[in-house]
Image 1 (cartoon, rainbow, N blue to C red):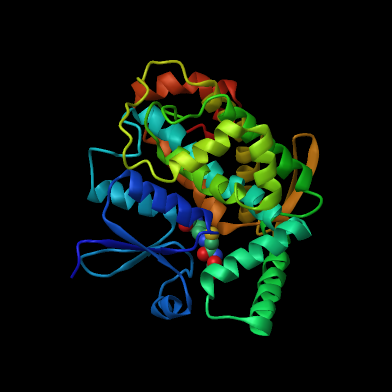
Image 2: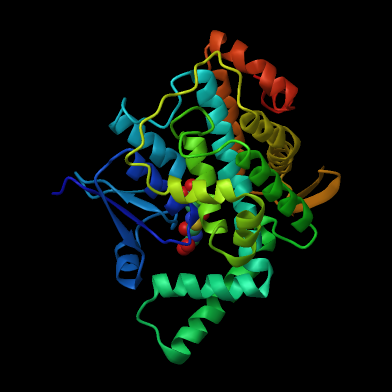
Length: 336
Ligand SMILES: N[C@@H](CCC(=O)N[C@@H](CS)C(=O)NCC(=O)O)C(=O)O
């Protein structure tokens, strides 16, 4: 028995970076373990087979899916250094913005990583170097080629197609511009301390800040964000306060809500509608362009979960956030 968590993941995995940064900020004793073949062998029973995997100190049990894992850590370590804003209204906005990072922001991560040869070559080597350190020569080249083929082959499945590329790239630029006007070592979405929403975007942006094309865009067009990403990786020394419940919302937050109202929630709603109708794929207009992709069950759960969370927000807190949700186009999709 140990008193340390184990967090198993890879540097190229945005959700692994998100969870590691959460554990560092929360000062939870943990070992960061890279998923090599020997470690993979330990994980054959973990379902679904995703990373990161969190292993609990007391019983060695394995857990996956970063949002439930972050909430599990909240239950296990309530109080100080929580990443859920105290105000339940802000808590809901935080959940919404985090969910958009996990489910939409990741399209930017996957698109930029696998759409262009320069990024494919860099990312495939990066990931094989981290996950299969024993490979050399022809075996190494074959693993790089096989991984590239596998990931490029999955692009259409997650909506990273040439047709959708302009919408995905436009949303990346928009998020960078919004964050860049706001973030810093003492400035996060919901005050002077980081929330789950900051960590959600951090995970995606940390990997985007490494792959050549999106890193170049971030360095040149959003340097504060680029520097903030480096800061967020380890905030174990940071002390800060939440935004008061009645303070005006930062423009970065309302801007991200507008992105949710214009892109993410219409996307979730269309996906849920397609799933309910038993359709394998769906199409809708986003930012004035046709956007099409396959239906995803998991994202139906995300949509249901967000709506259930909004229903649980107490009246007073709901009254404070409702105008922002209405003005940004979110309310119509989420209304109880
Ligand atoms: N919703 C999950 C997503 C996790 C996920 O998609 N992980 C990817 C890597 S970033 C994965 O494990 N893919 C399969 C693999 O790498 O073997 C979370 O938040 O943790």
